[in-house]
Image (cartoon, rainbow, N blue to C red; front, side, top):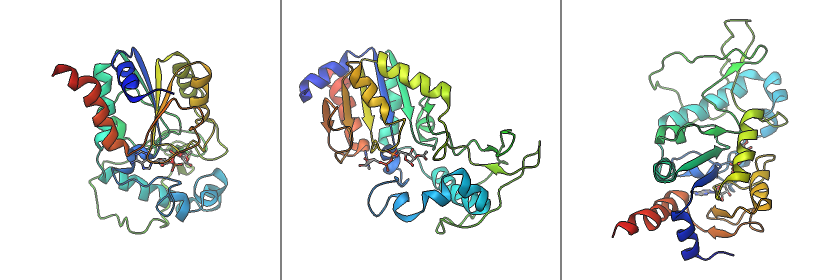
Length: 259
Ligand code: OAD
């Protein structure tokens, strides 16, 4: 088990930092997580209706409307200090691989580049049948009523084959994008340290990545206000909100050096 000073020292000399984020990294931007009690999306909505292909086939307008509700929330939100610090870390550390399970674009809007999106993106929908990408019309943030999460909005139609457009996210029982997952696996066996931020570790195969790093002898450090399923393999757990902890960590590792 590492101690804090040892961790900060290791952090200063990293050549390749790997970061895996989950819904917790966007929580302080006002985006709900999935499994936090009471506030989590799966505490209020049924994933079997809203997050699998069968649910979409049964009621496309309900599923499309729910993702539109989530997308509008994200469009109206801003990156928080956790997203911003991760983007700043990429300027300080020779190599940073950022892997996210999130389907929002808050890492990108904070300035992170080449983000590996294991679960796709709610901003890149495509045709359900032929996979032709769908481009949203230019939109000004309109008067979409985001107080109603489950509202039926018929999905647009594909301009190539006429079938329905589906959200660009990975649903339950679907495969992760192979290339992205492969890049993530390689990073988790080659990096100097894996920082796991704001994920419960309940969804596989993404949740396997910290185990892979641990098996490869790479230290696994967590930032999470709660104890999650990686507790047994993590070398160090920093208990707290990512938006508070990450700026402190950055300061301790890089700014205190200047004084
Ligand atoms: P979860 O909702 O399962 O877990 C969120 C984690 O974030 C929990 O461990 C919280 O303790 C932690 N957390 C909450 N607030 C935080 C904060 N401010 N700072 C740091 N951590 C915080 O979300 P994920 O693990 O991301 O899949 O869920 C994994 C996948 O399950 C998602 O990608 C989604 C969902 O079904 C798909 O959509 C395919």
